[in-house]
Amino acid sequence: MLKTIKASIRTIPDYPKTGIMFRDISTLLENPIAFRMSIDAIVHRYMNKNITAIAGIEARGFIFGSAVAYALGARFIPIRKAGKLPSKTISQAYQLEYGEDRIEMHTDCLQHGERVVLIDDLIATGGTAAAAIELIRQLEGNLIESCFVVDLPDLGGSHKLKTELDCPCFALCAFEGD
Ligand code: AMP
Image 1 (cartoon, rainbow, N blue to C red):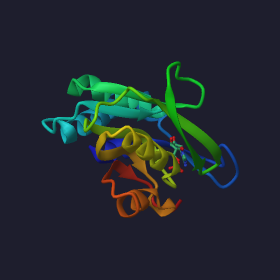
Image 2: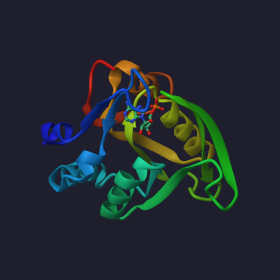
Image 3: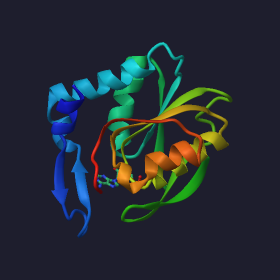
Image 4: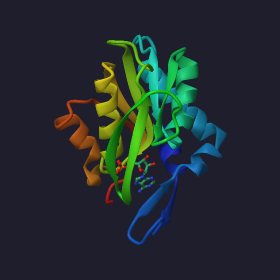
């Protein structure tokens, strides 16, 4: 199953700039079996764990996160790029593998101690996820785990989450070497 998921992900060398091996999940999404397997595997991991909220990171985290939230009967909380959320927000800057950005959450989107899983498509350096973890914790969510379809372990993000941020980290598949 995990082999099918990994095989469905296309690699585009030198996108969006030279030296980046872009792991393109659009081919996974276009493969109904691989997409269903991905969602089912994540749902299976968190069912019966009293997860009440799935926080998904814009944009690809929305695709996986909303399907998982629907299946678990949990709320979906969007973590958005700066300037997109209309009500009162908190904000956190972060470094990308290629650039810099800022993400935001509505201040009233989580209840105190609520059991949350963070979802994104991929973890590379972990900058995006670390910023999201910071926001969820500022809002006093109880972050149970961060979950990704793809881990790029050699870029150190998943290790950083576990060791420096004390946040369990799970991925459906990994690409070694970059
Ligand atoms: P990072 O903050 O370095 O962990 O980067 C994670 C975010 O950037 C995710 O939202 C990914 O969608 C995107 N990203 C970073 N590196 C790659 C890559 N090599 N292939 C595809 N997406 C990537």
